[in-house]
Amino acid sequence: MMRTPLRPLARILHARQQGENPDTIERENLRLRHEVMRDKSRARAEFRLLILGVAFFAAFTTIGARMGLLAATDPVEPRASAPGAEIIAQRADIVDRNGRILATNMTTHALYANPKVMVDPKGVAQKLADIFPDLKAKDLERRFTDGRSFLWIKKVLSPEQMQKVHEIGDPGLLFGPREMRLYPNGTLAAHVLGGTSFGAEGVHSAEVIGVAGIEKALDTRLRDPAQGDKPLTLSLDLSVQATIEEVLYAGMTMLNAKGAAAILMDVRTGEIVALTSLPTFDPNDRPNPLVDKTAEPGDSPLFNRAVQGVYELGSTFKIFAVSQAMELGLVTPDTLVDANAPMQWGKHQIKEFEGKNYGPLLSVTDVIAKSSNVGTAHIALMIGPLRQQAFLKSLGFFEPTPVELIEAPGAKPLIPKKWPEIVTITTSYGHGMSASPLHLAAAYAAIGNGGVMIKPTLLKREGPTTGVRVMSEKTAHEAVKMLRRVVTEGTASLGEVPGYEVAGKTGTADKPKRTGGYYHDKVVNTFASVFPASNPQYVLIVTLDEPIDTSGSEPRRTAGWTAVPVAAEIIRRVAPMMGLRPKLEPVATDAVTAASN
Image (cartoon, rainbow, N blue to C red; front, side):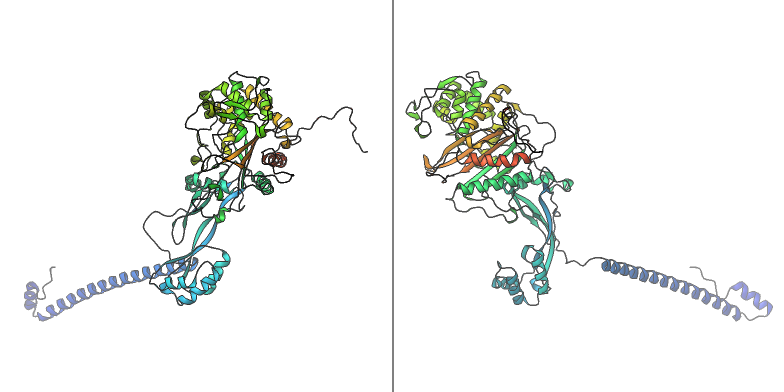
């Protein structure tokens, strides 16, 4: 920096010529220099004060804004953070075909503890044990004092329990909000819904995942954030489902059955309107699976008999042999076939129920009405093994049902490894081959809708449904007429429901032993029906495990005395609920009719 000289030579010489004192020039220049330095210092100080003022203003503004934000928000517990993806807690609702809730979400709280900030670990442990009887005070106290800083106590709390924990007042007890799955109808449609559990868990949220039923089969759809506000609509009708469960439970109890199953399905769309398996469970408090390896799967209430239950379905299969024979042009409803019993085939003897003999000849229609094993066997031999297998495969009996349940893929029918003619005979009347009631429902739906195989579904369908034709409309129509004869004149006479023209077939099958052979006093009874016979709209399957009717002088175990009356009561109650108007029988012209003014 250039400085002005205090004693400029030119001014000094000039001052001396004028007789002035040169020292005054130096003093004046020194004063001016000091003034400049003072002005620069003042400017520098003022700038520093400005910067400091701005910094203080920004700091106090930030603090004030933060305090205002905290004052305007609700206080929450500190959130534990961890690396990884954020937990998605939202799960779509499940509703029935009319929009009524079957499964939804409910906000609740989890209870956890930070033992390091507890005031009285021993006292807290005892008070928590008083609130939660399943917790032990000594175990809690041990965990509170072992040095850990985090401990789950309860994953789900009721509002009452949460209030009681609040009243303990210890700072080491903390709450984390989360969603849980709620099934407001309790046990209703439990085997369809299945249930949920917690997956990934955090302090403030928990991942709800499906563990069984449709909750697990469609877990990805239900957890999709893009469809979280769009409920999953099932084909079930809540009112019909409740009615069928009520009637089936009463029938199972009265007939001393070990278990029961029922399926009601629309024959044209494949929509399952109701699916029931008993005994049942509450998905809100799902029981643990059986650990006893010697127990049968059906001993667990979690076992879905309608889908997982693979049984020999007895004489309900006879209509398939007759339908195929008519489709191939081998017989007509009036064709007479050999029904002379017993029938000898090699070393095997084919008998009728209770040693009866319906022979020597029966029409094909009477073979179904009287449920003749021998007559069906002769018809099956006309068809032959290869064609029989192909037809049963087209009806879905060789693969698991494609219904939207996680249990369905594992319920594969039990097919004989070899298929000689004796297997053709026994399979024709439902022995030696096992399938589920849902398999049977799908096959009977094909007969009821005019010969088209429709895939069963638990989802509500919109618009027309297509399928594969397995028989002609004429064959299907004749088969329904034969099934109607079973109810009006045959083994299912207790299945008649005035106004609804029930058509169906009974099936009584001895239960196989694990060690081989069959029980003589344990049966699985089935009644497969379609209604109304003049224009079939629904198929109903009722299966009872080990039923026995003790209302008479002798115990009765056949389907005609057990499964049939239960199915009739179901149809009597649910048909009006589904909008089916009863077909009134015409009144004779000469009948007397009461009238009033």
